[in-house]
Amino acid sequence: MPPWVPSLVVGVGGLVWGIWSWLRAERRKLSIQQHGDNIINTAYHRAEFSTLFMLDVSVTNDSPKRTIVISHYDLELPWNDPDVRPLSDPAETEQTLYRFSDTLIEYPRDIVVNHRRLDLGKLNAGDTIKGLFMARGRAPIPRDLYTGEWIPVNFVVVDTEGKRYVEKMGLWPMTNWPPGPSEPHLPLPDYTLEAFDAYPEAVIDPRKSE
Image (tube, rainbow, N blue to C red; front, side, top):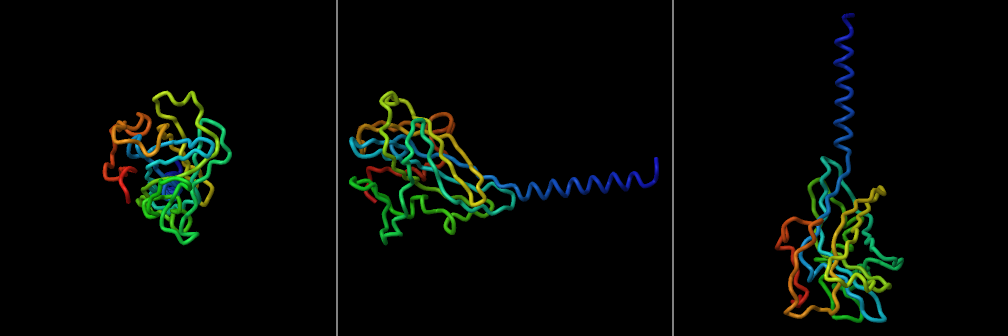
């Protein structure tokens, strides 16, 4: 064996290790979870008006070193509704509450994630954003989805570099809002959390005034 071979092997190994370490450090990874129960993770169609959506979510930057900046959030439904949009930041009109117009459903801005994007959506490694995601669409919930089962949806987070992070979640089709005191609290579907809720302090009861 030529005397330079061991040095070459060590050099190549060091280069490969260096490239792998750099790629690992540069990797962008977000983990997304759903929290709460059917009372807060809800889809509700207002007859002849629009369909309202709420999810209780958390988004964590699991990258080894990279900072991730959230560009926007999306909600993908199992039916066609091109008009689904997150509610706009109430601060744009000098308001303090996120509100579904023409309803009594409203929440303080600081517990909603919709505006946590761009400058307010900067996540350093290990950081978490947690709160409500609120959106509105126009198409009604298909009648065949009122079956006493969770409606599977995709909650999507897109970063400023265009990478999409998708998590399957569940929405409960409510026939009345707000739900009455006798409405049973149901655990999230198995594809979100194995337990009832990993973060019980994150559960927000919409029947309580804020």
